[in-house]
Length: 57
Image (tube, rainbow, N blue to C red; front, side):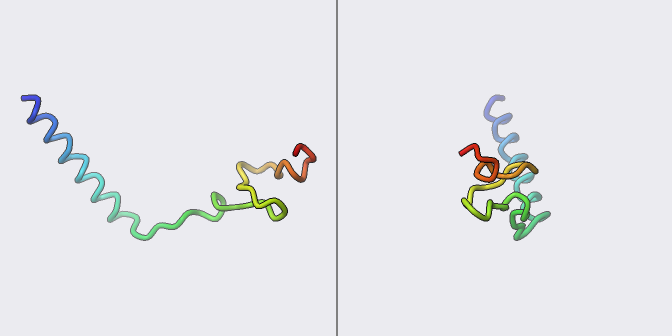
């Protein structure tokens, strides 16, 4: 019974993974997530300015 449950779980996970790949083929990262500071090249998180521009470095 335990083997059957594990097998069913793995099959369901494989089917979900296949549908996920079909839904978004070739999806790239959004520009907001890939935004970097112009002066120090650190990744920007949120809307606040970089720490190097606030003088907190």
